[in-house]
Length: 490
Length: 93
Image 1 (tube, helix red, strand yellow):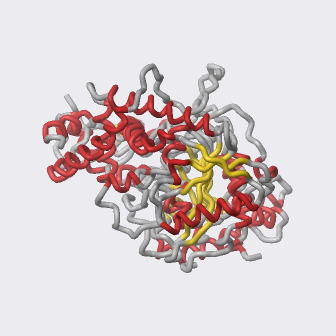
Image 2: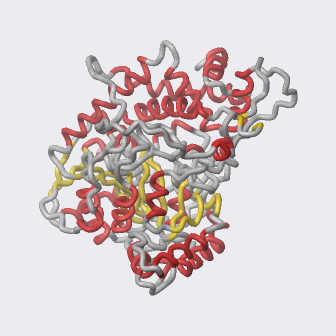
Image 3: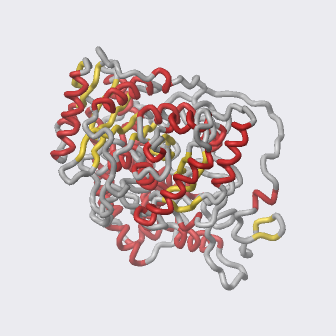
């Protein structure tokens, strides 16, 4: 068995049937992390106890216990998820030494399913970024070209997965942070319907947009991982009480008669020629497989970026108010501990602890929520948000799944866009509307640029219609011209 | 352009110290971002309720039972400064 490229399903089966031990699997991937992560900077913290965790899985199997569908599968977890006893920083100095006393629900569910946590993965600070350059722990590099960004904010997860330093990873997606890095690194990334996956223990950025999801190598692995992490959680009142379908068992490539929507607005946008070609190729493939292509329209999607940044920055400014230097995290030095002004205590601590991009968004969000501006900005954005969602609901009356680009261009060079925040924000033009409407979306690898960088295509489905989206993704994966291609760094 | 006074006011509301250099940078960038956001003002949203949670939330009730998930030691383990099991802060009065 070629462990490096084995699927999650194959590893779990091999471990359960004792063809290989969880310990051997973990050791194999630990060696890869040791050998390759120096180039990528995808890991922030390694789990020193990974061998003990793997041995515990083996011990349970030896006793004849049912370990779970992900038995012995090594996973990397984005810094955004609380992990009991393992440093969780959100990529920020303000949480540099934070060790949570509990696991996020999704992490607990992965562990209960047999996963071995190998460590924590780098990300943009508080998930604010489209390039993975804003982390306090330095930029992560794209394993397909070390001069390029892996995308953000789940860039560490995408890079580690693409370089096969682990067999599976978890990311979070607030405005495209799973799909965009998945596209830039040539892996499969799924953002489920809002409410499918618990946000308990996921460090909050923008609560009405954040959703966790798998970033893995195949559609089958994505379906299986999503099944494990989804479902109602009493700790998160925004999780749905709907049953979790067995997506992985119901996957099929037969998409004959399915209606694939192409959004008029995306077709008229200016795309990098390689991205354009990748989307066109994917449409041709779907046609050949018997799908019907229909044109749909979501006219207000052109306003998705401003609405997204208004909502996200406003919610972030509120969520990040908890970092005050009292209960956890960084606290500024106060040499003279006689009476200090409380506002000064908070302000200095936060000023030192947050990076530039985070401060920029807190300032923006605070402004938009401040007296006299709330109605013009946050409230207005919420109203437009409802109109965007309504347009999507109309579009899904005409089609099963919408196909679109993930980004306008393939991965860009490190440092190329970091000095122009607005240009960086506009990078999220194809992904943000999915989060605003709470829809499931995913990226599937389907092309390579002239320079040899991966390009994904995006699929979006109606609320709770993940199965349709995963089936179209599987069909695309089967026909993908880049199937089996791997980054040269490995 | 957002003036220095406005930046100072927002920074105060946000309990966030920003340096002179940052203030200068943010005033230009915020103005640019807000200018970009202005484009949504022309969309007719009369009578539209703002969307806050994009999917339905089903209310549920749980038993009103007291439970202890963490010990006091665990709750204060990450405190930047503590006295016993209490969070220690500089005197503010």
